[in-house]
Image (cartoon, rainbow, N blue to C red; front, side, top):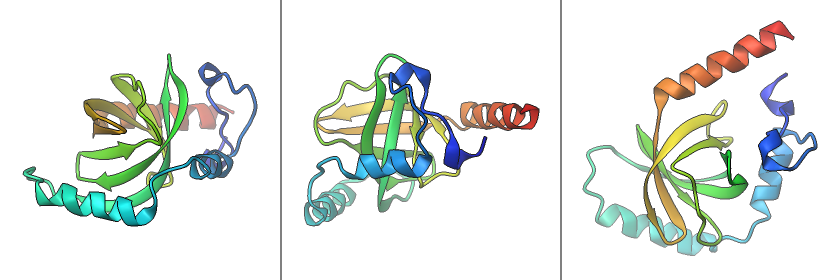
Length: 144
Protein backbone atom coordinates (compact mmCIF):
# COMPACT_ATOMS: atom_id res chain seq x y z
CA UNK A 1 0.00 0.00 0.00
CA UNK A 2 1.45 3.41 -0.89
CA UNK A 3 1.53 6.43 1.40
CA UNK A 4 -1.11 8.09 -0.79
CA UNK A 5 -3.62 5.34 -0.04
CA UNK A 6 -2.81 4.35 3.49
CA UNK A 7 -5.55 3.52 5.94
CA UNK A 8 -6.33 5.69 8.92
CA UNK A 9 -5.28 3.82 12.07
CA UNK A 10 -7.97 1.66 13.62
CA UNK A 11 -7.31 3.33 16.99
CA UNK A 12 -8.50 6.64 15.60
CA UNK A 13 -12.07 5.41 15.40
CA UNK A 14 -12.45 6.67 11.84
CA UNK A 15 -12.93 3.17 10.47
CA UNK A 16 -12.78 4.23 6.83
CA UNK A 17 -10.11 4.53 4.18
CA UNK A 18 -8.84 8.04 3.51
CA UNK A 19 -6.10 9.06 1.16
CA UNK A 20 -3.24 10.97 2.66
CA UNK A 21 -4.32 14.05 0.67
CA UNK A 22 -7.89 13.79 2.08
CA UNK A 23 -6.56 13.68 5.63
CA UNK A 24 -4.53 16.87 5.11
CA UNK A 25 -7.39 18.62 3.32
CA UNK A 26 -9.56 18.07 6.38
CA UNK A 27 -6.72 19.36 8.59
CA UNK A 28 -6.57 22.51 6.44
CA UNK A 29 -10.28 23.12 7.10
CA UNK A 30 -9.58 23.41 10.83
CA UNK A 31 -9.63 27.04 11.95
CA UNK A 32 -6.13 28.33 12.67
CA UNK A 33 -4.76 31.75 13.44
CA UNK A 34 -4.58 33.86 10.27
CA UNK A 35 -1.28 33.69 8.36
CA UNK A 36 -0.19 37.27 9.26
CA UNK A 37 -0.40 36.40 12.96
CA UNK A 38 1.42 33.11 12.33
CA UNK A 39 4.24 35.01 10.60
CA UNK A 40 4.45 37.46 13.52
CA UNK A 41 4.51 34.57 16.00
CA UNK A 42 7.37 32.91 14.08
CA UNK A 43 9.29 36.19 13.93
CA UNK A 44 8.83 36.71 17.67
CA UNK A 45 9.81 33.11 18.33
CA UNK A 46 13.12 33.56 16.51
CA UNK A 47 13.88 36.73 18.51
CA UNK A 48 14.32 34.76 21.73
CA UNK A 49 15.46 31.46 20.23
CA UNK A 50 18.67 30.46 22.02
CA UNK A 51 18.90 26.98 20.54
CA UNK A 52 21.94 26.02 18.50
CA UNK A 53 19.93 24.49 15.65
CA UNK A 54 18.69 26.80 12.92
CA UNK A 55 14.92 26.83 12.56
CA UNK A 56 12.88 27.32 9.43
CA UNK A 57 9.50 29.03 9.69
CA UNK A 58 7.10 26.82 7.67
CA UNK A 59 3.39 26.16 7.27
CA UNK A 60 2.51 22.48 6.76
CA UNK A 61 -0.68 20.68 7.74
CA UNK A 62 -0.13 17.72 10.03
CA UNK A 63 -2.10 14.89 11.55
CA UNK A 64 -0.93 13.94 15.03
CA UNK A 65 -1.60 10.28 15.80
CA UNK A 66 -1.58 8.94 19.34
CA UNK A 67 -2.85 5.56 20.52
CA UNK A 68 -5.14 6.88 23.25
CA UNK A 69 -6.01 10.21 21.63
CA UNK A 70 -6.90 9.33 18.01
CA UNK A 71 -6.04 11.71 15.16
CA UNK A 72 -5.65 15.43 15.86
CA UNK A 73 -5.21 17.98 13.05
CA UNK A 74 -2.53 20.62 13.55
CA UNK A 75 0.10 22.62 11.72
CA UNK A 76 3.88 22.48 11.69
CA UNK A 77 5.01 26.08 12.14
CA UNK A 78 8.76 25.61 12.37
CA UNK A 79 11.37 22.90 11.79
CA UNK A 80 14.91 22.37 13.03
CA UNK A 81 17.38 19.57 12.38
CA UNK A 82 16.05 17.48 15.27
CA UNK A 83 12.55 18.73 16.03
CA UNK A 84 9.59 20.92 15.23
CA UNK A 85 6.88 23.10 16.71
CA UNK A 86 3.24 22.17 16.26
CA UNK A 87 0.29 24.54 16.58
CA UNK A 88 -3.32 23.52 17.13
CA UNK A 89 -6.59 25.44 16.82
CA UNK A 90 -7.13 25.00 20.58
CA UNK A 91 -5.22 23.60 23.54
CA UNK A 92 -4.76 19.85 23.11
CA UNK A 93 -3.94 17.04 25.50
CA UNK A 94 -1.14 15.54 23.40
CA UNK A 95 0.47 12.24 24.43
CA UNK A 96 4.18 12.16 25.29
CA UNK A 97 5.01 9.95 22.29
CA UNK A 98 3.24 10.70 19.00
CA UNK A 99 3.31 9.94 15.29
CA UNK A 100 3.23 12.91 12.91
CA UNK A 101 1.97 12.55 9.35
CA UNK A 102 2.55 15.57 7.15
CA UNK A 103 3.43 16.48 3.56
CA UNK A 104 6.63 17.90 5.13
CA UNK A 105 7.85 14.28 5.40
CA UNK A 106 7.92 11.32 3.02
CA UNK A 107 6.14 9.23 5.67
CA UNK A 108 5.12 9.19 9.30
CA UNK A 109 7.69 10.28 11.91
CA UNK A 110 7.91 9.32 15.58
CA UNK A 111 8.33 12.24 17.98
CA UNK A 112 8.66 12.83 21.71
CA UNK A 113 6.90 15.86 23.18
CA UNK A 114 9.47 18.04 24.98
CA UNK A 115 7.30 21.03 25.93
CA UNK A 116 3.70 22.27 25.86
CA UNK A 117 2.61 25.90 25.93
CA UNK A 118 -0.96 26.96 25.19
CA UNK A 119 -1.89 25.81 21.67
CA UNK A 120 1.71 24.87 20.80
CA UNK A 121 3.80 21.77 21.39
CA UNK A 122 7.52 21.27 20.80
CA UNK A 123 8.75 17.82 19.80
CA UNK A 124 12.04 16.06 19.18
CA UNK A 125 12.00 13.70 16.22
CA UNK A 126 13.13 10.22 17.20
CA UNK A 127 15.14 9.19 14.16
CA UNK A 128 15.80 5.63 15.35
CA UNK A 129 12.11 4.80 15.89
CA UNK A 130 11.13 6.66 12.71
CA UNK A 131 13.55 4.51 10.68
CA UNK A 132 12.30 1.32 12.38
CA UNK A 133 8.71 2.33 11.57
CA UNK A 134 9.64 3.06 7.93
CA UNK A 135 11.43 -0.31 7.63
CA UNK A 136 8.37 -2.07 9.05
CA UNK A 137 6.07 -0.29 6.56
CA UNK A 138 8.39 -1.20 3.66
CA UNK A 139 8.42 -4.85 4.80
CA UNK A 140 4.59 -4.91 5.04
CA UNK A 141 4.32 -3.43 1.53
CA UNK A 142 6.78 -6.00 0.18
CA UNK A 143 4.74 -8.87 1.64
CA UNK A 144 1.46 -7.71 0.08
